[in-house]
Amino acid sequence: MSPRDIRCEEVIEQLFDYLDRELDEEMQHRIERHIEHCRDCFTRAEFEKRLRRRLGETSRVAAPESLHRRLREVMESF
Image 1 (cartoon, helix red, strand yellow):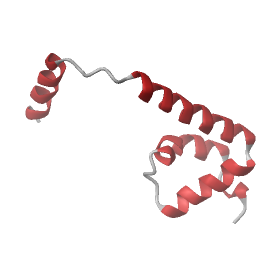
Image 2 (cartoon, helix red, strand yellow; image 1 turned 90 degrees about the vertical axis):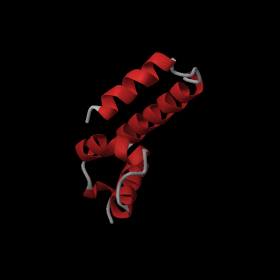
Image 3 (cartoon, rainbow, N blue to C red; image 1 turned 45 degrees about the horizontal axis):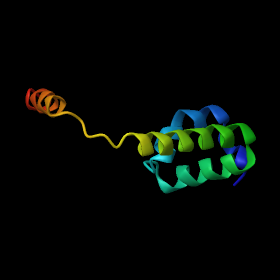
């Protein structure tokens, strides 16, 4: 399998699914191989990973009860 068998545009389109491990095994592997050889896509993936990690570290505040209540109301309306 060549790292070029998937284009950069395809990697970027599926990057969030890749990072969330929501792709099938074959596509996950194709993107991993591409990122190993493509500096631009590697840089983008690393940026997104670090951003997610940073957001996870800073978002430790619990949502207010009013937000929980509104979300429940919206969900129940469906």
